[in-house]
Length: 211
Length: 104
Image (cartoon, rainbow over all chains, first blue to last red; front, top):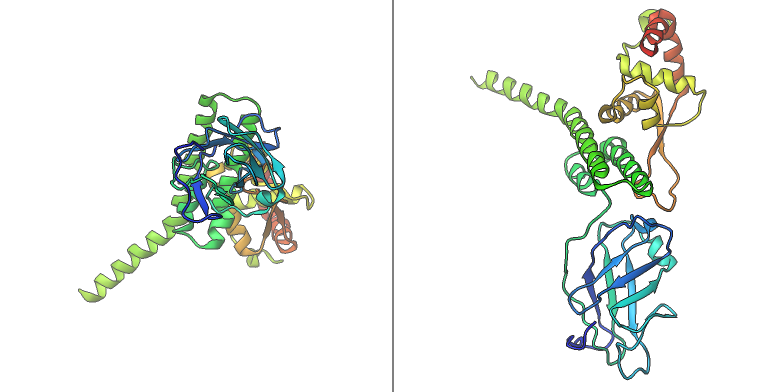
């Protein structure tokens, strides 16, 4: 939040911003640290256990405060004054929300607030394999996705996060990425292969009949 | 089950069922099966094979319990009664020897 932020059109209006999503190597903390929250930009570190959940943070200007940037609430908890770093406590609600592939920061202004975070800033970084899974979902049946692709991605994430917890360097993580991309590719070919083959046969039969 | 009635099971499927039967009903992760297969099963194809076994009714699968820190739950596999019966029958008609060689 910065002082040059534009006020929302109506008090109480909520704005959304997409955040960076980064799984920290230290997963012990049960809070989010939001850094550099400004009108157009926000970044934070999420606790490890939120990796599959969209982050929903609600920050409100402190009631009665002359300067809405003076302090923020998160639920009932007052957080640090906006001095560049804001610490938000996590709520159970955030953890209960199913994964939607979107991480959002919801900032609503209740008084004369000047909070207006309204534009996506950076690409969201989701748990590894999210894109691969989304791609498979567009091509294969639900059963195939659950039984084959989700299973591969689950192993991928398991290995990846285990490596992260063990303090693996980026080369090790890149090797895991590479390995599972290969495995995913193989599974993809194995599942798609019969369909393509049947298509070729069908085209062959159709051409024979036509010609 | 008579030998003529036995399904023709690909070796990898037979091996997976052997590993699951050997675990006496204990549920196993796909990666566990890969690790115990002496390099015969690969991560990229294990789930395709398990899916085929499931469609044949020889294996069941379920998601592991969701826990904090798990983005996508892994799957656990168990052989069905029918699967175990087919496996035992195939074992008797030469499968046991093949399995022994494969796992040697």
